[in-house]
Length: 307
Image 1 (cartoon, rainbow, N blue to C red):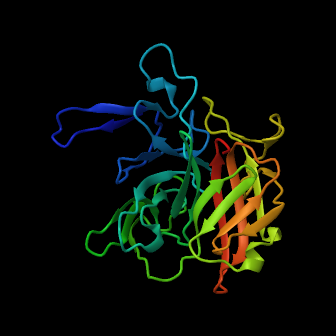
Image 2: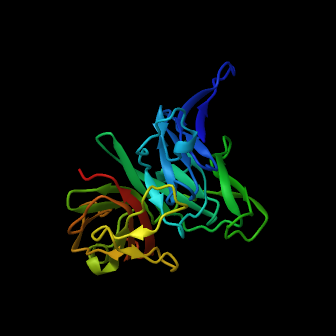
């Protein structure tokens, strides 16, 4: 259950972090950033996207040396609901100059849901938190590994079908190209003192984006325990538990009081009364872009702290 580092000459093996359960892939960013996924199970309430730090602990106490085990795990970037990603793959940083507005972004792969996500991060003090937005793509098998080709600058992904995946084929090797056309997706996410700011990659239609009726959301908490996975718990009533066996992640609906569009037409500031730290927030919108195209998207994020 360790995240290891090996130098180029192979002279030593060192432990960077401990506590992983069954990570199916990692990433190292252009500036040394380290991430991993993991899979729901014992000590893993749902699939996290971990931000790995030197000496970190990310969940499983059993493999930590000594008699005194950690009483708290490092917080992940976000926790992903089981129907969004029930079995994670790797992550990859966009280093290609040919992937348009995603240059410098972190991507996450889902083996279980055969999906690709844009990971949006926010740093408040020493805390890194964020969420995901799914690309409008469905892969033929459970994608686990991805690389940007040095020649064409596009993304190549591979994976297979096995345990608990929506895959249609036994294996896959597919390419995702940026076609120099508008991408109608969220690009950035930031929690504020009064709500959430969602920044899209292209301008939005002011009337639809500013209508709070076009936005909806709910939230819940999962708990880090030795149990396999975690029930969903109410953020406002800690004793209230939600049924896991429904299509949408169960949770508590919260009010979106207002939605204000920025002057550049790309950022929507949502006013959410009573916003608080939660392990899982789900935001949905059905709006229009400035060019008239429809945008129907979902953001799944975690709030560790407020600014």
